[in-house]
Image (cartoon, rainbow, N blue to C red):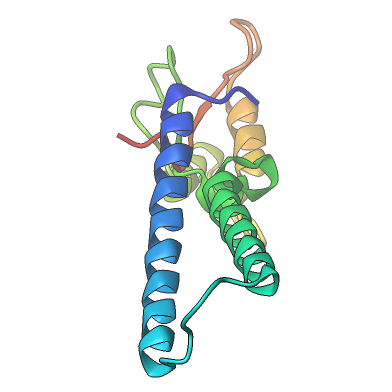
Length: 148
């Protein structure tokens, strides 16, 4: 999958926000702990450094996962907000799952689909609506970070 500039900016922004939030929370907790225990005078031991390093690493990994998960293809049903069909005069604008369902009901007549409507199923139904005379109708997904 190609990562766009918007996605890269979204990942960096989300990562920075999450990391800032976690850091401020931990610093606040540490400050309360230090005020409560005035016996924490002196040098930082190797054990404390190891604990701080592991907590820091864990926070970085969690913040990175939170910011990257919306771009993973298997999570697209949760994070893709809609699809656009450039060059197709019948499917105009950003269409979400509800819009697609209304279009399918109008095109196919009685349209009932059991279970959750995934973006792959939607793409198959859209392909079935058009002939391949002018080539397949390719939709472009509007991802979590791609809305403007």
